Image (cartoon, rainbow, N blue to C red; front, side, top):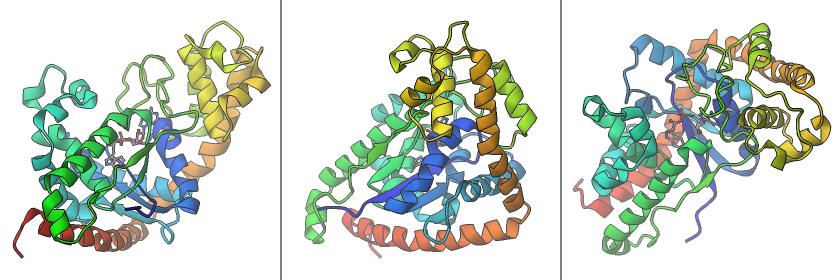
Length: 344
Ligand code: TYM
């Protein structure tokens, strides 16, 4: 069967949004609205796999929705909603908990990183998280999932779960007259110059909500122009001039990162950026990058503030999106319940 191309992606409302979320995900969601049927989610149920203060969870949910809107997601063309309003996510996640194997979850590098040596003290939800992520995607039979590089392994697991479900229930799927490849094998879309934005202070680490080596390590979407310029000025670099070709960025993670950020913010390739700045030092490159970052992020932050000042409108948009998402989700679940043999 050929599936209608459909995009699904989500972001956790679990901290202040940063440049990695923007360049690795949100910015790339926007043009897909012209080519695909798109569903973008605020995955609040994923956020609570680690402790969230309830008031903060609410604030971050509104702020993330504001960022989606400010970046250019159009709630008329695209479905924007928060996960907890569509209960079918939890329902399908439970079924996938029973399809996925412990060993698969145990191999997830994000689980290993987050749980560290203290796995016993983590929530069961954190361990089972990838099954919920698979449910998010497969509930809508999404074919394409734009994400940053750190989500690649979770998307491979989503394919494994789809495949095992299709195999385990093949007889029942056929008996109900449904297509043998009931769930699609979703394609990750990990493209562009900034699929792994690194910390500005340590090129070995990814930029993240929790990168704590320094408060200069992460650019937040709500940072003001002075703060953005200051963080870029203080970003770790090296004494060499920029190379003229991309191969010259190998073994220079900090330089590679800054060039990647420049490229992604201006919708160019790294090669193109280097053809302009090759041979120049960071003394010239950093001010150009700071100007560019401020020119892109400044207006977006202003738009975010405007949306955040009207929470009722954001709630209305999320509610409308949840109704539309819920209608698709229920179609899938009506089939899945029959496939499994649940009596209704
Ligand atoms: P989350 O909330 O950690 O991150 C949201 C998105 O931002 C990307 N990202 C980055 N991209 C480039 N450089 C970085 N430094 C960087 N940091 C974060 C992530 O790759 C992601 O695309 N499990 C997911 C949320 C999720 C989801 C889904 C995604 C739940 N269900 C279904 C896609 C489809 C997560 O924790 O993302």
